[in-house]
Image (cartoon, rainbow, N blue to C red; front, side):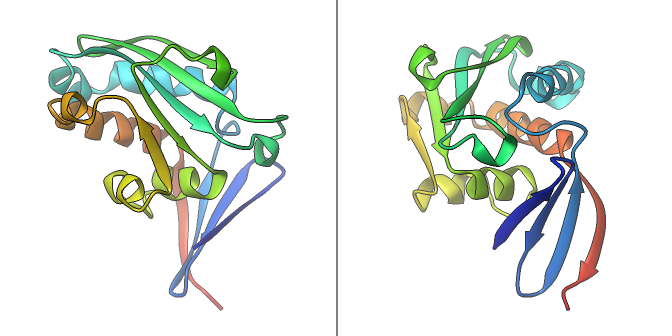
Length: 164
């Protein structure tokens, strides 16, 4: 699968069967997108219920920020506290203090956030790399699943047409 963007507003996922366009109000891995992600997490009842027993800092690292107009790698670091996201900020990966760090390239992140790839499969295939205690993270699997759905909700499907 291949992804692309036009004017930082459209993201496409091209597979052998479908072409899907996603509308993004702001490019991913920017502070505006981080703010929208934080708001989505805080509005999400399933995350609030699943995350009630979880306090952690999680980072999503984009290995190359060029596709969203940034120089070098960039990280979204979120502070999660008992079902809420207290902070979401875009920082240098070198400044990350997150307990759990997920790292991948632009294509991998867009496939996960667009719903084209399961995040667990992405980690298992090495397309998204994880740093942190996997056993501890798995005890919070439902919260992590809800968190991924919140990230996906910031990127919305607007059309689904057959590929030419």
